[in-house]
Length: 291
Image 1 (cartoon, rainbow, N blue to C red):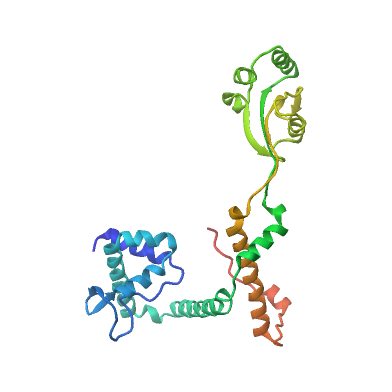
Image 2 (image 1 turned 135 degrees about the vertical axis):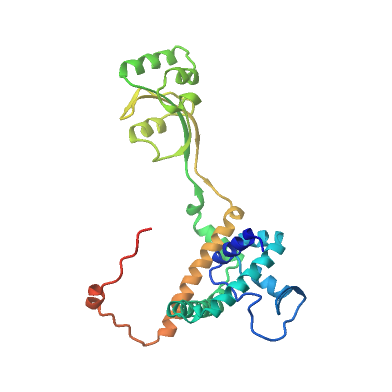
C-alpha cells in the first residue's frame, strides 16, 4: 500500500464523528451484495462500501467516489490497524473502554433523538410563508450610503481644498493629489457602508448630504475631511424565495428545541434533581491545558 493512502485513511477516519464499523471488520457470517474487494479471508461488498461513504462528511463523499480504489485501500489499512490493536489488547485498556462506552451512549442517545424529534419535526411551506409575512422587519436589507472624502492634516489646507472644489476642481482628481487617506488612490471612494461604520462627526455630515452634494470641512480625530455623498440606498425587503430556506431552517431549529424540552420533561417525570452547590463549588478539577 502506498504511504499516501495510509495517511488518507487517517484523514477520512478522523473527520467522521462516530465512524461506522469498518466494512472489513464486521461480524462473522455470510455477507450480501457484490464483492468489490477481498482482504485476506474477509470481503468488502458494494453495500458496505456505500454505507461507509455515507458515514463521511458530505464534502468528502464526492472526493471518495472519485478515488474509489484508494478508499478501498484505506479501508484495508483500517482493517489491519484494528486487528493489530485487538491483538495487543488495546480495546481492553481502561481508558479505551471508557471512550467506547461514551461513544456507545452518544450513539444510542442520538438515535433516540433522531426517532423522537428529527423524524417528527416538519415545517410546511405555509408555515414559512406565515413567518415571513409577520416578521418582514427581519428580512430588510439595511440602509446604505456611499461616500467619498478628501482628508488633510490642517484646517487651512482643508479650506484651500474646499475653495478649489467650489471653483470647479474635480473631486476625484483632487482626492488623488491632496488626500492623505489610503482611499486617495480610489479618488477618495469609501464604498458602500451602513450607519455606524464611521466616527460620528464624519457620519453625521455624510448622512446630512443629498446625493452628489459636498460637505463643509468636517474635523475628526483623523484630521479634516471634505465629504461627498456619491449614492444612497434605502432599506429594501428581501423577497420570500430568497429567504425561504433560511426561515425553514430557523423554524426547524425552534421546533427541535421545543420538542427536546418536552421529551426531557416527559422522561424526567417527577424525578427530582438535587445539586449540592457547595460541594460542586469546592470540588477540584484538572485545569485544561492551554492550546
